[in-house]
Structure formats: structure tokens, C-alpha cells
Image (cartoon, rainbow, N blue to C red; front, side):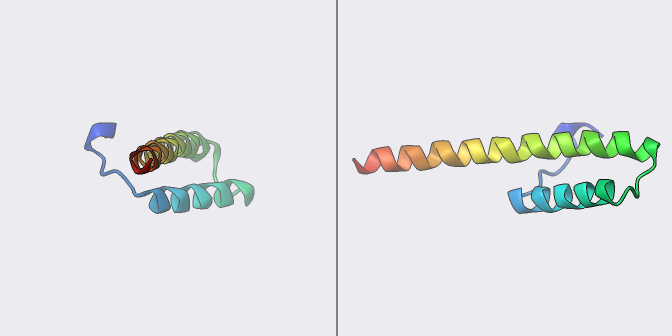
Length: 68
């Protein structure tokens, strides 16, 4: 599925998915075929969270600058 067609998770949803992936990896419950898939998904989720944090930071900075 194309990334543009996927509904974008909220920050909290993405973090919860990341926690589950990490827990599955730590419990060694993933076979090698699934491991690669989960690492790709984790990478996508990390980028999504990073982008959301960056945007929130920029918005807060703009708000604070407007108050000066």
C-alpha cells in the first residue's frame, strides 16, 4: 500500500505501535521474515513521530514569538 494512501496515525497511536514492535522483538516472537517487515514499519513510525514533534515544536515557537 502506498504511504500516501495509509491513514496517518496520531502520535500516541504510532508510539503504541512502536512499543508493541519493540516488545515483540525483545520477546523474540518474530520470525526472520516478519522481522524485516516490522523493522520497516518501525522506521516509518519513527519518522512520523519525529515529523509530528518537529511540527509541534515549530508551532509552539511561532506562538511564543507572537506573544513577544
